[in-house]
Image (cartoon, rainbow, N blue to C red):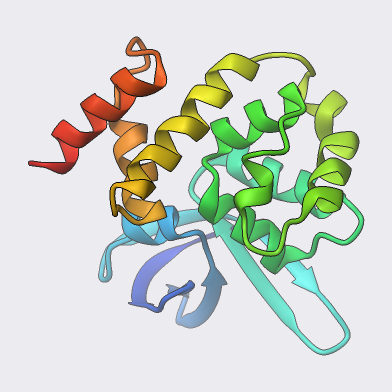
Length: 187
């Protein structure tokens, strides 16, 4: 099993990067956030999950061990495969996803393509105790409201999420977070 890969990024695609490690090019599926961080021609180290099926072997790579852990926890939920887990991590930041799960809020999870109410409930049921239940419900609602407000103003999900990630944590309240994010987006 391949658990870590170090090498030079030789190519990037929409959902993957090819890493040259010792003269062998490994195709590694990754989140959009990870792919934005990786630069072609530079060296990188990725923690990986090696998924083996009857018809394929795939590598999923993460810059952070915590992201990999959350990915693997999602894989433990019945009905969630590697591509769905990666899609979940593409839409929700790991911290927002953790808050959503631990607070039992399905609103954020159901905004992810392919995740309905039943699947969201299943994710919460399976992972709530593993992640530590009961923290961050109000903060999550603010985050969801701020994200939806930015999207209603015409920003893409990715643009809104990225701007909200850059808003300092001490700024609370959905409207204050939106105002600050708009300043960041206007630069």
